[in-house]
Length: 102
Image 1: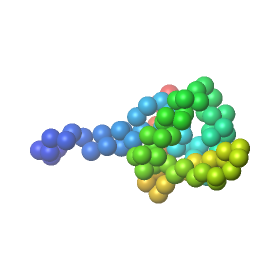
Image 2: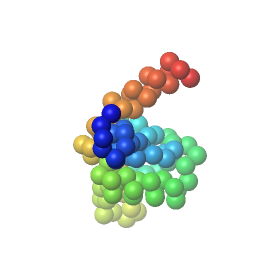
Image 3: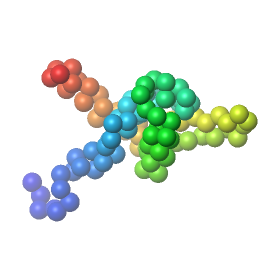
Image 4: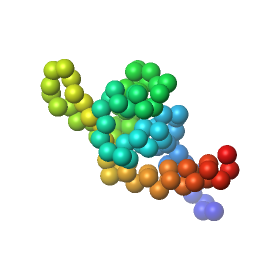
């Protein structure tokens, strides 16, 4: 252990994955760009408000890119940034752990 007072280095990663929906949003966006309604459908159980808020937070954290096509009706796509895609090995490790231990 280091004498650094910021805590465990994994805390930073856990902050980006905190909450019920963030890891699942990243999981589904690893396959590529998705529209809001498609994300809401595949996530199942997330409210419009919660998904919207979570995506805005993830965009502010630099994990998600929001692309507005400027069309009527509105068409908005979400994808992972490079920073967001770098979480793939973390999610894969979590998936493998769950398969072995759950």
